[in-house]
Figure (cartoon, rainbow, N blue to C red):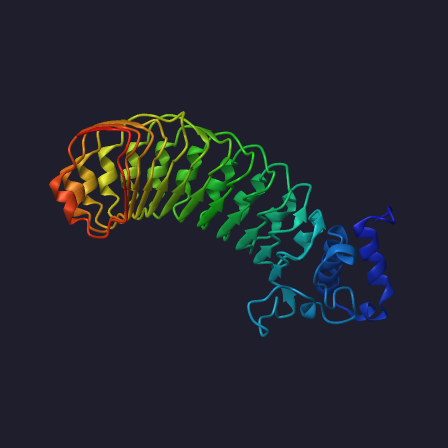
Amino acid sequence: LNITSSPQAMAAEWLRSIPQHDNFPTDRLLQRYALATLYYSTSGPHTWIQSTNWLTAANECTWYCARENEHENPCTNGLYTSLSLARNGLHGSLPDEIALLSDLEVINVSNNDLISTIPTTIGDLGNLYYFYVSVNDISGRVPTEFGRLFDLNSLLVSQTQVTGQLPSELGRASSLEVLSVSGTPMGGHIPPEFGLMSALRILDVSSTDINGTIPTEIGKMSKLQQLIASQTQLHGSLPTELGLLSNMIHLNTELNIKMGGIIPSQIGLLTHLKDLRLQSSGLYGTLPESMSRLRYLETLSLGINKLEGTLPQGLGNVQTLETIQLHSNQFQGTLPRGWSNLTNLKKLELFSNRLE
């Protein structure tokens, strides 16, 4: 607080400037100090689009926060539980003092111009449920302290400048359902400890520098519905353990030219699968007959691989299919007669094969 131009010093000075603060309880003073520090740290006086009531004598629960309806309140019993300032022109960095808002359940500061790093003090927010910081210029690493947040449901840091690797400590975030780091320069491997995340529904590591193989432990993520790993540096083959993910709806490893191997027959166990996108994934071998069990499949995208053999007759039984892209492979033979049953088919791409 000795640096008079620091956000912390300006927040403290603001507190002193309002006489009513002399009668406030400690938790309210800390809350107002933390919010004022955030305001100054993110250029509130200069760049915020909406700042109604901020840094006035008005109750801080009336200060502007994005709300789904006019009756929504960012506070519960007078203490902040939701800090939603998405698309509000925030410039600067999130201060460590955000952790003083100890009842926070939601932090949404996506689509701003934030820089610097994610404060490690976030790990002190034991009630945090949502953390959205996507579409910012935040850099540094994803703090390992997120692994201490056992109630955390969603962690979105996509389209930022976050680097490093996915912390293995996230495996301890047992309530985490959504994790997205897409569109970042992040590298490293997918930690095998992620197999401990039994609640995870969506894992999006697309458009990153994440490398290594898809760990076999992924088969333990029993609730996983979407694995989006397109355009990465992953290599190796699809693990057979994918067949254990009976809730899988969307599987995408497109544009991973370092990958390879065959399509495991266990893919046929994904009976809820709607979207299978493995284009340009270095695949070879034949299409497993077990794919005929994918009764809900709508999109089958396997173009630009080295797949061979004949087209499986059984796919004609998957009448939900709307798109089949098998172009730029080495398939032979003729179009199976059974495919005439695909009455919902809207797109069929078979060019650049050896079909008759």
